[in-house]
Image 1 (cartoon, rainbow, N blue to C red):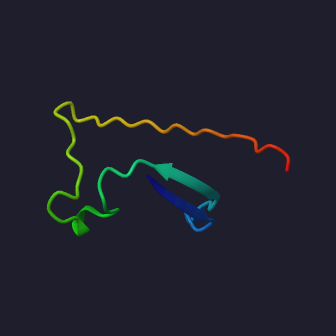
Image 2 (spheres, rainbow, N blue to C red):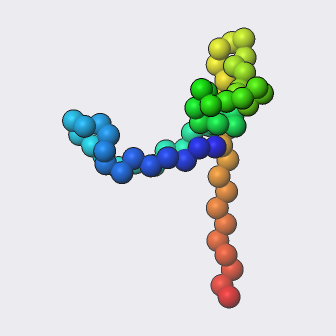
Length: 62
């Protein structure tokens, strides 16, 4: 998973703040930096799929 923040610098015409969570389909963010075996292989359909499951639990009072 990759987590990134936009702190109001994009786009120039109307900057906003946001947080993004994206699938990271390999070991590195930039394909140009990937070594042998570190990049994902897209299936023949041309559409990779992924799932993110988030679980939140409330702690018991101390």
